[in-house]
Length: 163
Ligand code: FES
Image (cartoon, rainbow, N blue to C red; front, top):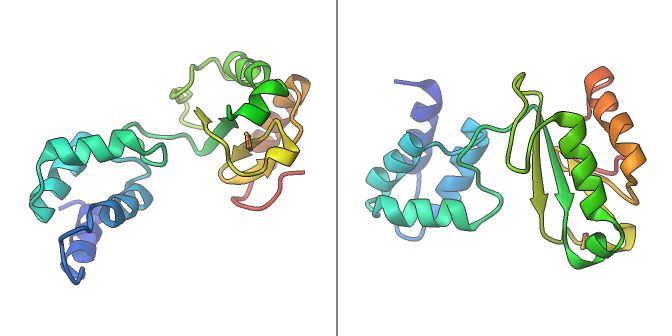
């Protein structure tokens, strides 16, 4: 059996109770696999004894979960109100053009994926983007290329402030 699936089973076996453990289990699966494909959703549904439709409903409801693989660099552009009025749509459009992918897409080399998200709680820095959880504030469309280049040449560690 796939070692990630074995780890997931171990996690589920270690749960005090399976009732109400769906979200926690999905978070764990997302960490292990990077996304939650259909076969993993079905596996979790079976293991927790909940309908597959419920698992699918939860996975697609929360933006944290993804049913598709993500890139090495996960770029999220905030489209909350504060960011939107300060030009987030132009920033998002520039990322789409620079990477050649749409929102929800991943580049062929699996290096970048692009998502739009709701307010990430840093409205004072609008417009805000994050790369693997690292926050970049007051981003302008002309910054997009250098952020992508930074990923390609230096890499970007997760978390904290990008600039
Ligand atoms: S609206 Fe973008 S951080 Fe709040």
